[in-house]
Amino acid sequence: MKKIISQATIDRLPLYFRTLQLVEEEKTSIISSDELGKRLDITPEQIRKDLATFGQFGRKGIGYDVHELKNKISNILGLHNKWRLAIVGVGHLGGALANYVNFASLGFSVVALFDKDKKIIGSEVNGIKVNAVSAMKKIIAKRAVDIGVITVPATEAQEVADKLIKAGVKGIWNFAPVKLNVPSEIPLVNEDLSIGLSALSYHMSQD
Amino acid sequence: MKKIISQATIDRLPLYFRTLQLVEEEKTSIISSDELGKRLDITPEQIRKDLATFGQFGRKGIGYDVHELKNKISNILGLHNKWRLAIVGVGHLGGALANYVNFASLGFSVVALFDKDKKIIGSEVNGIKVNAVSAMKKIIAKRAVDIGVITVPATEAQEVADKLIKAGVKGIWNFAPVKLNVPSEIPLVNEDLSIGLSALSYHMSQD
DNA sequence: TTATTATTGCAATTAATTTCACATTTGGGA
DNA sequence: TCCCAAATGTGAAATTAATTGCAATAATAA
Image (cartoon, rainbow over all chains, first blue to last red):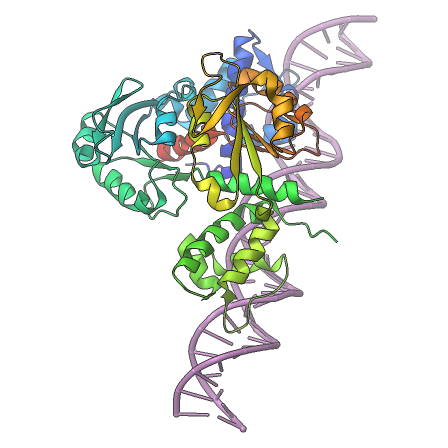
């Protein structure tokens, strides 16, 4: 009885979650879809519809319990899993992600770093030692890595993806600007910066 | 006679553009929607529909001229403008973006860096000197900056956005996980890493 | 107690996007 | 020259997503 939730809805849930975290810190215990919508520029109807896809637990005339809703969304998104990440490619972007503090508030932690460059292997980034790509299989198993983060050049990304999957990661977060082929049971999310930048360029050119 | 192109289509155009760049390097002069689709995992019908929104210039029975199509997409996306970027917040992420080479192939260049931390101001990143946020107005005008890139903490992002707009930038690329209020004539693109990561977590939790 | 106001949940509708189906065009080979 | 295979372009159908309208519920104040 798996309810199908649309990708559009899934992409809005983190926004709700983050806003609820902030609201919770403000010691507010109830919030309406209207207020949540104002903070995020999303219509309250859209929010109610999104939330309704996974059950009803708002209270008519009142609103939603902030704490309860936050936990519910956290569960839907699987954030209680405390996912463990390995970053492959400790260049500028990989290094930045290794230091990215916002992960922690979502329950993610970086537990391994890999690179193929001998000049980088052995150094430490944010307290984590950089290992050789050749040691991937062993270290990923040992540190119980769930998610592989790919921050290598596009030309090497497919090879790295194959290795990560062979080593046992359960999902891939890809920053390389290339389409990766992965088995259908391995979730893959692409973070393609050139799309957003190009879209910005497009909108700036319209007048 | 401005043709309205959907955001979904605009987001696919950079993928077509990038693939065409690669195909061009392979010295291939003609490509079919079928071949392009295979490389990107997008149906050929979808590609033809997307391209049809801005005119018809494929050749029936033949396909599309790689060079012509690439240039056409570049023009649609406004990539011929050679946009000039300023990055505000030279932390790990801002520093990584300052070094990001993929920008160049799309015609973007980073021409200014700003931070409020006195320990960082005056240092150089990728050959560009980091300036104080207080010098923003003057430097943005002088260096003809088009796009402001926000890589400061969420709590400071709105203030930075206001300053960038006052200084005259024509678009904003925001990496801070917060909803920014900007005038409707200033295009804004949000690059929210927690959305993708949360979506990955969601899909990994479904079984 | 009763009216009023706030707010959710949901069905119906509308809008946007994708997929399908096929007529049309082009080049090449018999 | 004529037929066939390979492609595009596009209207129609199907699907997916967003919006609208409203009944139902809860708290509060008269």
